[in-house]
Image (cartoon, rainbow, N blue to C red; front, side, top):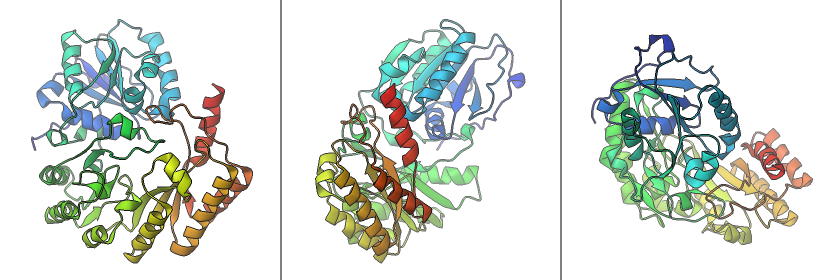
Length: 418
């Protein structure tokens, strides 16, 4: 891997006079994306700008006048309201046509670019950013940048061409081993975002990235991964490839990492991929005790409506196997989905309580939200009935249920009133 320049978080008063600025609006939720975009930029391009991070809730950098500035945002639907307020306030000082150019990308820009464009950005990028962002930066520097909505692609990027990180952001993220999903859950935007495709980074490239992490942070001992379905690595997407998993994990171990985390956040697994042939391969390598597994419902009819592609029986069998192999399952569930009845909610929470008793699972709870790009993008969430709400709180009070499900209920209510 090529040697990367190491940038520092620069203060505005340290900027050379008149030098162009690339200002990254960094939050916990987008630091991985921003690092991937910088990592995709050739160093000769980045050398022409000063990279400045505006981080989290810090005051906006007081940039000296006369500095052309490209302000880059990446966000999801849940963050749109705050971003909208921030952009509106900034536009009072930095109107369209001035030295400050505002560009947005990310999940919401990719699934609903018109909505993001309406927030006041000069340019909205829909699609994968690694190939197009360096071109945007060059066009901006040359004064020839377009405005409006730009659709990246149509070809998918080759993950091996890009490192997926850059030291500027100060964070070495979980290594993205796969992108996309072959399944088509109606509540999820990923299948539509990547049109049902699944791609993998090669083992050699993943190891190269892991070794680069050690060069930057010599004391680093642990590797984590990013994937929509970790046990699908190296496969065509519909059934696991144990041989590919062995090649990946054995190569990471040979690279000197004693701690390997796969199947833990942010690389959950599907129940139908939890089979003995996979667990026999991964168990000797993995140091994470928890496996995150997406079950979503304990009712076969609801699973079919969701288009999950697995059954309740497969989910229970997967949990049995995880416990047999000494993993603690952290199980995703969703309530409030379209067409859901009160009896469905009661049956699902009863299933949760049963699994807690039988297998000692942890629960990661979600309330349905209509996501742009999903099949159910226009559906209204069903209210959680009081009885089920209280039983979920009881599980939370026992320390076996977590998640932002109550915040998601509040978000759904605000959105329905808008």
